[in-house]
Image 1 (tube, rainbow, N blue to C red):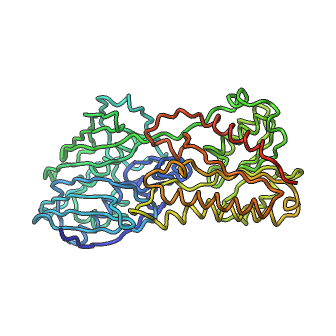
Image 2: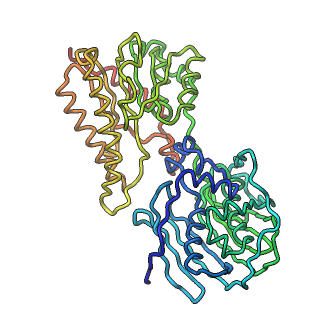
Length: 487
């Protein structure tokens, strides 16, 4: 099969937010970078249908004449992140048919099968439309069990001026009612079913040539659900179109135990001697560690980069039950902006816990993905080294005892397919920590090989979680407390 490159596009975060207005799909996966960091992709992703429209705009610009879509089938293979460079390739499959493929970093992101009909020369417009709401609507928070036979009718969002601005060739050459139907698909998935915790998998829609129609309503109904994959199939109907949409329920962000549960787990004075700096303490294992230290009588300062609200919630929760905790903004990739060694104004830090991490993802190549490895190393090695250097440069710490916790992974003993780069970066952490321990004998370095635990990073895995995160971390902290201190 011969593929021809027909164009390249990028979608930045501002454009994603503009597309949310055009379509009515305000799912935080696309528009809220703070919330999206806790979802399975680790950041916002562009609307899949926005990528479809970008591609249709290229096709319509190349055709240069009015056409109507006869059918369009789309499979979303992987997410497209804001500012990704997206290459679009086409293959002529029939006289009025194209196969289109979107690649990001050489990997398939979308496949589109498009068939069109020649237009009559008069391009129908939507006579009626629902304007963009003044207040950003919130997606429905459904459970998988709630969707059996769910059905509804809703108004299609249509804003011709914004469509003209974002997709001028589509606005010029495709029927408005067809564009409005395609926009309605992302509205269904992102806002209504599955709604808040959704991933768009694909759709298959057939249109009829009905140039006089401008019906502003579309109907949908759940016709199948598959609990093995948390997947739903939804039929859609409009007086110009019919078809099916496939979507998945994505895992919800993980909520760690309440602070009161940690108080029941830890003796009141177990960590009373700790003035702890918890790097990456606004969620996950860092949050658990801060709560354990506070419950054991210690005082933590947790750092955050983007998750200020999460950090504030943790601090308030601990303080409201008599514990000690503060927060500070710190970016391990730009460390010089924060006076991190002075986060306890009148006390010296006794312990550092380092949990900064990017999204833990598999490499894209058969054996080795250098870009993924370098991303891991920027957090686990460079970010960690910069932090340690700041403390070594401060005589209050360089000549005194400091305990440093830099976790490794059980994957070094139990290799996992696809995680070569992650495992190698953690092996580098262990080697680096051994070198530091030799060079600075008055400091204590601990790099335990932690098992996989339930966090935002792992919530999408089909795993029977038998190990409690709090108990695992309490064991690790207790073992570290037993390590000999060389004076």
